[in-house]
Length: 361
Image 1: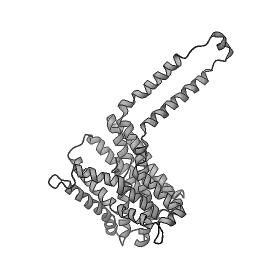
Image 2 (image 1 turned 90 degrees about the vertical axis):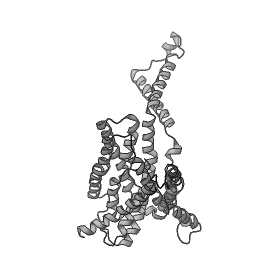
Image 3 (image 1 turned 180 degrees about the horizontal axis):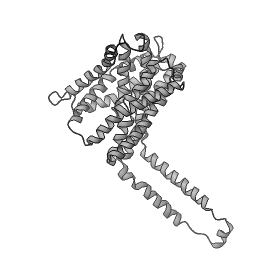
Image 4 (image 1 turned 60 degrees about the vertical axis):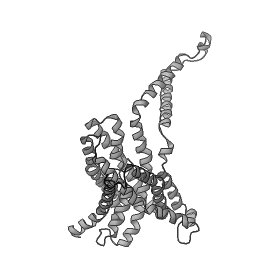
């Protein structure tokens, strides 16, 4: 393939995203006001509670089977690595730019969580549909594209609503929550100090604990205190967001053969449920991209985040993480962790390192 053909193939999916984002930007303008702040809020709720769970559940249920999940075992690990490397780079960025505490969660979220949902669902099938794509027959490529993009959507959603949301909430409430551990430790030490003492005869009958035992006891109490603090901080309703729950349901439907036969396929008795979810899911990508365009307009009006932090996030997501992704995928291929002949799979794995920050952040 010539350079021009490769450029056109790569350009088409990006143009689709730009056009949809541009429309969202346009209808959010003050002169148009079709997607103003209130409409954007309501549309965002519809996407969050209805459309995004529908596309997650239907895509996984239709595309993922037990055999395909075993074949794609490296993809969840690859997505986890994007979050790990992104978090490390975010920590370095925070130290370099001296980011204020209440913005650190946002920086970690933007650097670690990529747009693993709607962008792969748009870009990967669009690349496959091009006649001169580098991945072979368009029909075969399109057949493989949906499971790859669906699994990326599901794993990304679960990690975003568990890890990223938890980190952002911890840093947002850090000022008030920092007082809790010290208060807890103070209460514990007070309770230990006012324990009723026994007489000398009783003390002499029982051996005194050694220094090692005291250290073990205090360490265990500290661990239990930290567990209690974490359990108070973590809101399970937020961790198990609708998209994450729908992804788990989609996994179960796709992997468990008896349930799959009931719901998936032209002759399935409950196929109407899957087809309804699929119809709702089809609207998710355009709506999410319109919201992204409207959010761009709000960002252009001003931001409290410093320019150095914004430039750093762009450098992490656009330069450093893609370079790390190439290294990870090449190492995995050389070590035999992924099939060397499946170019589309390798492309999707690299794309997961190169996408911009997730809209959910």
